[in-house]
Amino acid sequence: MMVKRYAMTEDFKTREKYGFQPVSLGDVSYEFFSIFWIVGRPALCDRLGIDMTADDDPLFLNFQGKREKWISHYVIQFFKHTLGLKINTTTIRALVEMEAKRLCREGLLTEHDRESIANVSGHSYISTVRDYYLLEDRDADRRRSAILFERLRQSRFGASVTTALSTQSGVSPVIQSEAPILSMERLEHEEHNHLLLPTEVEASVDIVPTNVFEGTAIRWGANHPHVTVVGARSIPWSEAEKDYIGMIVEEEKAARDGVIPQNICAIIRRRAHEDVNAHAIFHGHHTLDSARIRSGYEAYTRREDKRMKM
Image: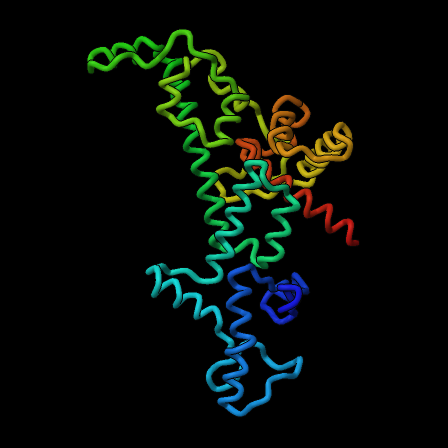
């Protein structure tokens, strides 16, 4: 640990899944650990008159010279007394995983990068992370529905209603007659980057009444085993969906000398919308946005990893 700044351990709760757990030290933690190892631990052993130099002796000791089993308790107490926050080691792992997902979504991390972080964390699907992902999905639904409802309203009443209401209230009309069309490609791009808000839609976009729910009026999932399931928290990805995603991944890799593009999930979603043969394969819930396609992409990669290990 002192030489390499990391060590591998087999003594942790999720050992059956991960086998070994790396324990690494950053610059600050290395400095404090050095003080503990060189000064603190030897002083405690001297005071108690015990010899703790064998390789299998516990590293962290309590004041009675026994193995300290509740190190995470000190993390909780630190944040409670210094910042007034209720944070434990599980919360920290969840924050790391959520930040990794955000960076991956923005193309700053690859899927393999994110998987490495999850493996080191050892808790990739803790409840805090699942709740955060669900919250993200619902927030994406909210932003998207606000845009589509505005398009629907304009297709039904036209810009004259907005103009009349704005004029009566003394506010200048917000719909610009020469504004660009809100295409699904732009909608997906803006939604993916969290840039398009409902107020921005009114300020900058001329809502086109034709083809109101472009891309969503498709009859999805005719062959999906869970086609009748709606409103569920999650819907399993079928093998046919994974096969289709794998086909797109391999085609895109072949076109790029074996490199998977950063926006692979957006590509899969676009091609699924454009390919009439894919409509019966994919459940409609799975094609709403690129974040949901990413869940299918991850299911596909997990399946392929298992096959490689067989």
